Amino acid sequence: MQQRMTCWYLLGYSLSKAMAKTFFRYRVTGAENMIEEGPCIIAANHCSNLDPPLVGIACKRAIHYLGKKSLFDWPVLGPIFPQLNVIPVDQKNAARSALMGAIRVVKSGGAVLIFPEGSRSPDGKLQAAQPGIGMIVAKTGAPVVPVRVSGSFEALPRHRRVPRCAQIEVTAGRAMYFPLTKLPNRGFYDTVSNEVMDAIGAL
Image (tube, rainbow, N blue to C red; front, side, top):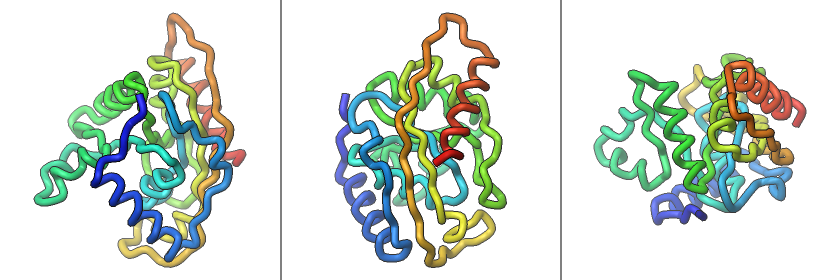
């Protein structure tokens, strides 16, 4: 099914796009490679807290994001996060919670943004992939769109609180399809994750 944009999502989408173009000379390359209908996994490198909205506005469709469950307890903003398609991740069992949430979205026909590295890069360089995205692929059979975000580390690295002006580009590569296997294992997950990370690195 096609995930509609809620009023809050549309507002956040519009504000993010306006700010990205104003402060970061934002541009998208390979937009035609984005899968705008049906189930898909968007896999991107992760250098900054700016990455989720920057990738989100590169799509014409509404996509889902993973976020700490504690965010939903924030006053005022907490109740809005579900309207922004944020999937709550329980920190007590973060890996399983994130995977199950992502799999539910994809199986329902939605798109989810995944960072295969698992956490923000400390130096802006690509990190090794974690097996999580391989498991999501195995459980859903969904195509993966590799995405490279360039410039977000210069704008807002993990040690900096206030972003600075920088040119940011989001590049989407061609969708990747993986053969389904009846008995996926850790080796399969690792292989898929590494191939996706290699595709991101090649962009």
